[in-house]
Image (cartoon, rainbow, N blue to C red):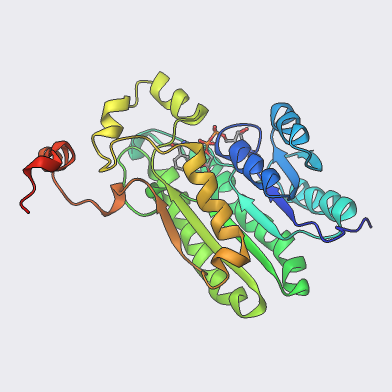
Amino acid sequence: MASTAGRRVAVVTGAAQGIGRRTAEVFADEGYALVLNDLREPTQTVGSLESRGAEVLAVVGDVSSEDDVLRLRDRALERFGGVHVLVNNAGIALIAPAEQTSAAQWRRVVDVNLTGPFLLCQALGTGMLAAGQGSIVNVASIAGLRGVADRAAYNASKHGLLGLTRTLAVEWGGRGVRVNAVCPGWVKTEMDAADQARGAYDDVDITDQVPAGRFATPDDVAAAISFLADPLRSGFVNGVALPVDGGWSTDASWASLRLAARARSTGSRST
Ligand SMILES: NC(=O)c1ccc[n+]([C@@H]2O[C@H](COP(=O)([O-])OP(=O)(O)OC[C@H]3O[C@@H](n4cnc5c(N)ncnc54)[C@H](O)[C@@H]3O)[C@@H](O)[C@H]2O)c1
């Protein structure tokens, strides 16, 4: 078994593109060695990390498969000897009215978005508990905090992921393993491009909802994940579901009020 020689090791699932790739890059810049998972070879991510001088191991596999998850764990431990951070980022969207969502579609979304993270928490959390340290960050969504129409399976999976996060936080927090979640608003990634290509919504539908007036970026989400992963910056933060949404999930304003508040010029403030 190779030694980590003091280097921190992070596993990021769904790392071939989008939020997962950007998160891996941020970790590489922070000096982590990376274990990358995806359904396909994360070739571009590997290239980007190696150009930053990071040690990288890529393990192709499906997070919902017990065999694939155990293989990922074994390869990671064989190469690096231990894992300090797990980011459960791999996820799939499904946009369909509830009454038209088939049982097979429902099961696939829940398998990938909820059962996968559970299997990874179990497989890698065991080693973290034995070491008495570790940080797990689950990538949920504001769809885990609120209802969003036409996403019954996706929303249920992300609500479930927050339930898993909170339960493991209380079960493992006393043994040195913190478990937190980020809840991004809509992010400009390939997932968004695919959803918009299907005509599900457009940019203005999203930006009008957000007090900050824009989409989240992979950088916004990666920065929050990096914060929650790092015991020096967030060592007493455990069990949170951190919105990274520009204020969307906290805003009960109606649309015209939100847009008026955003557009108000500073000159109209009384002094
Ligand atoms: N894009 C958004 O607007 C948004 C908003 C909130 C939350 N999220 C969540 O953030 C995470 C990443 O989203 P993204 O926008 O980067 O998505 P993306 O579709 O761009 O990337 C997801 C990656 O996960 C991989 N993946 C899918 N199923 C997998 C499986 N079974 N096993 C291993 N890898 C698998 C895909 O191949 C892909 O590389 C997801 O969990 C998503 O639900 C995204």
